[in-house]
Image 1 (cartoon, one colour):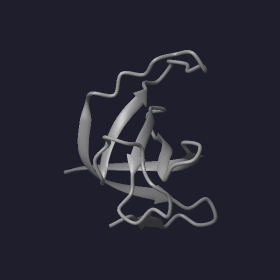
Image 2 (image 1 turned 120 degrees about the vertical axis):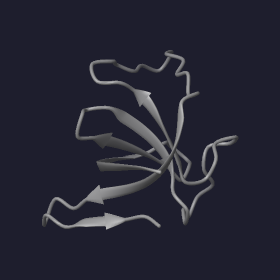
Image 3 (image 1 turned 60 degrees about the horizontal axis):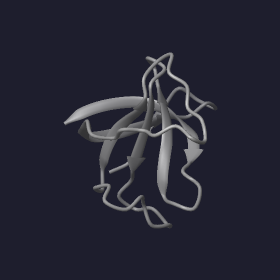
Length: 88
């Protein structure tokens, strides 16, 4: 399982799927284990996928190909202190 240290950008509107930014400036989508809202359909739990690689931009009409899934433990950095929190 791959460890990804990241910051939370927000969620995909109306879902429990998180948008994350890693240290290499890649944007990831991630379905956590205990989300309040339903995650994106046909997107497995506790799996991450790179939605936009460093330097790529998104737009309303852009199709994202989400086919390179990673089993992942996502650790979210806390801006207020240097400790990390793990979603497990």
